[in-house]
Amino acid sequence: MSPLRCVDRRRRSREIIALTTAFSAALVVGLTGCSSSDEPDVQVVPPATAAESPPLAAAPEGDIIPLDLPVTATAFDSGTESLVLLSGHELVYFSPAADAPDNVNRVTLPSAGSDLALDGQGHALIAAGDSIAQVDLSSGDVGFLPLGNDEDGGAEFTAVTAFGDGSIVAGTADGAVLTEGRSVPGLVSADVVIASGEHLAVIDRRQSMIAEVFPDRETRGFALRAGNGATNAATDGRGRVFVANTRDGELLVYSLDRLVLRQRYPVPDSPYGIAYDAGNELVWVTQTGLNEVAAYVLDTGIPVEVARYATVQQPDSVAVDSAGGYLYVSSGTGGGVQRIQLEAPDED
Image (cartoon, rainbow, N blue to C red; front, side, top):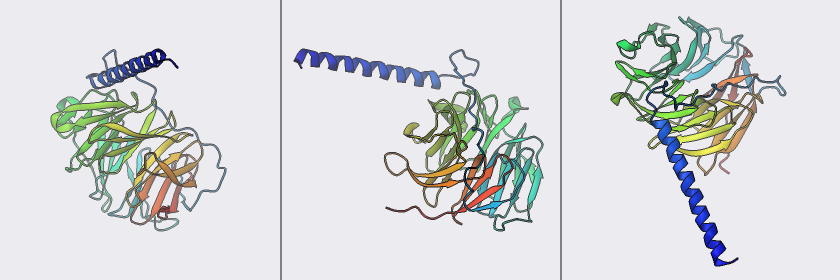
């Protein structure tokens, strides 16, 4: 090869890199500079949904707790040892120790619930229509939390979480993030709110985007695309966020100390439900197209699958009891809740 041709190829390579860098910078500026969902440069996609599961090809692992309700969200409260489930206009919670629990508690919500979170103080938080309901899992008492400011009255809540300082943060269908007396606008929709240590982030499903949020300053920070169909997310509580990119079939891993996409790994067949196992440092992801759930370790350059189980049909949500060593997978079609006893991953 002649030196001239070699130099020419290097020059073209530098030009391609420069163009790629400029395009990436323009994309980030376009995402972070949007202050209103009405601006013409905001590009939206139809929100991704879980694939409809096929009939079961294998018997689910572990035990099945019978429950004839379509479950949309699952959580485990370690303080009260309660399995907490969201199903339409009902919050259902009970001790999952028995195969057929007779201590099932039911709370009727004012509207169909869209999101469920735990505050770490024995309460369940539910985004339900224009209300954020707070249920005491010990007494069954129900209260409603005022969020936002006077201009936010009548907001349709889509997401809720508890922040590290004890405050409650909620997202709305029109893209605002609300705390008591404060409002951060600028998204198209705020569908998942993630509190991780001192950091707060939001998943906007209509833009398939993750964005930093600073409620104390009432402003939004950097934002990055999360594929073409981000749906659900979980966190390790230390600044890492794990996102299910359902439409593209991926597991995405971000850091929030500086919003960066750290890892991207193919998880086909509609990854949807997602949970973090703090005890074993695993990320669990359901695949509704397969009726399976898989676990990944993330301490290497890429996620590594270390466990996989057949699940109930339509495994739309998953939760982990790290202390007790159980995984709970809930059916979105009324097929019950699956309880799987976990083992520590093989160190080899």
